[in-house]
Length: 189
Image 1 (tube, rainbow, N blue to C red):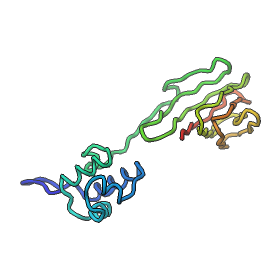
Image 2 (image 1 turned 135 degrees about the horizontal axis):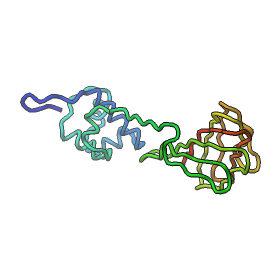
Image 3 (image 1 turned 180 degrees about the vertical axis):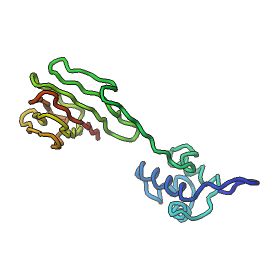
Image 4 (image 1 turned 120 degrees about the vertical axis):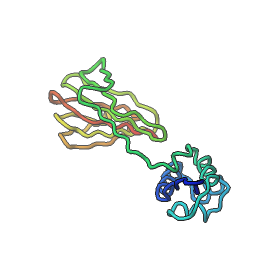
């Protein structure tokens, strides 16, 4: 990308990283992105390796083929940091059990998962009906003790234990000790 008088060049390594990241995000081959953008496969290969001299037209065509804003290809990606302090975040309580799910991170575009902080007390279990087909739930127990998993055969977990189970069948979370805490990741396909 050549600039006009006194213009600066977008760093090739940023462009290379951006092109690779966005192409992999949408799951297309080098040849398919090149075809969609109307550029030579060798040109795209050079750009992804950090060499070449891309024009604004080439980068614009690639941004359209990848369905991303032009600036996303030429500006370094800035890390996004999100902090939710204990006791903050949208919390939803169960009607049947002493069980609270606090949403920590909802599923962003092109990702397929939600993350929850679970706090539960002994008593009635949290019995969940099957979710959408293909959902898998992952639980890491942080404190306490609990029976977690498929309703017909839950597994007893201790702090540090991890379990993954199909969320598209009936499943349960039953605290066995006061102040049981877990992180639950609901993965959607």
